[in-house]
Image (cartoon, rainbow, N blue to C red; front, side):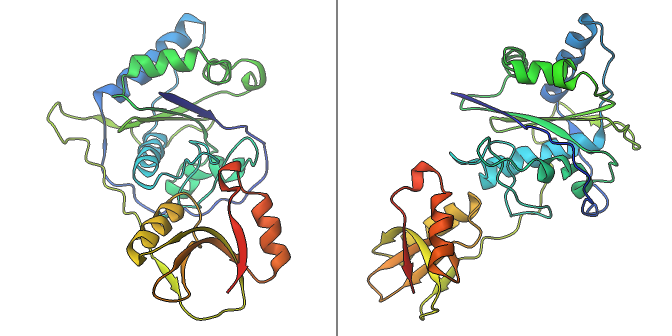
Length: 286
């Protein structure tokens, strides 16, 4: 099973967040370098220049694939370009129905000292990743092929940096028009565990409400145990519902809310914007 996601880029002026500081040491795996080589070989055959490998964009890509695997911000509503709220970056849910391109294009500035905007394509496969499979799949999709070959709406872009990240079935590729100012990443040794980049994710906090608040909650699930409700809260928080909570009316019923609002109308309006998978959700005052 394969999934692909490309961002629809809107050029906007935006004051990005400050970078988090010094990047940790990391290396590029042989598979990541293979995918990088395939892309540039294909560009060369089509009369285009080689895109230099970028440590900054590789770091962004390698962080994102780990965020996708560990925190699962890509839900049935949010695309693979989405980011969780479990790291030192701006969380966002991006989809064709609810695009959030500004959050995405500024990720390199949030995570590194890269000066330009970044543009991403992403991929997921339920089977083991093969860089050749990823490459050929991207080349079979018009949007990704056009981005990598600077065709159609991408024809006026001049890619000067590229980053690759592969991890546990996920692949992310970032390109940018600004040249990277730091040295290229080194290749990982052929020893197991050499690609050991560690990302300091935040801990999920399970919020429990046991007293009346007068607020309106969007409820999506009722459980007989606090443990089961807690697992669902963790799942929804990872999916982007950062305000998900457990509501305890008594010690027998544990309801799970996706979000809460000051007025009933605000809650009803928010419910309308949820995807079809949440059509059974309801609003209650607690």
